[in-house]
Length: 148
Image 1 (cartoon, rainbow, N blue to C red):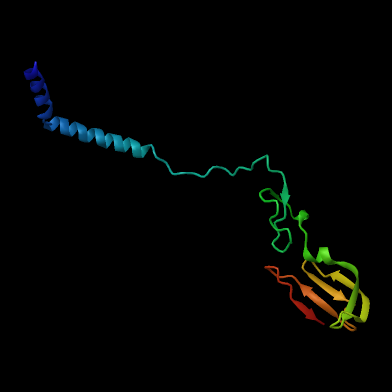
Image 2 (cartoon, rainbow, N blue to C red):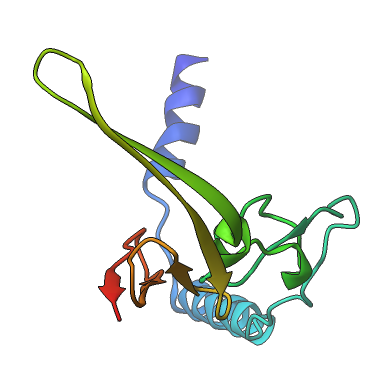
């Protein structure tokens, strides 16, 4: 029995490929790669998808205070809040001057009027005896003040 097993395994290890088997394998590989490459096609992006569950609106104007709040959602600039809208109005300013011991030296009060010129520009009048102060909001929370 051992001799029969050695004879079978010996034949398997001494298997030689003849010319026809080699040509058949080459043709099979060429056919396989030809079919594989023929099955490929260029990737096409799918159509954009909007999730129907997202219904909240957000401001998409960079000059607004609430820019991109509530994102992701539906862009709607009617929800925007601008700096000039928040501060516009009439104010009454009270000022007190104290000395080193904490006693009141002088008090003063006057009305202030803040008016919006547009969404990012506003003026303050009533603070100075003559003229007004102009504020303009620029990017990154800067608020330069100019006197006229």
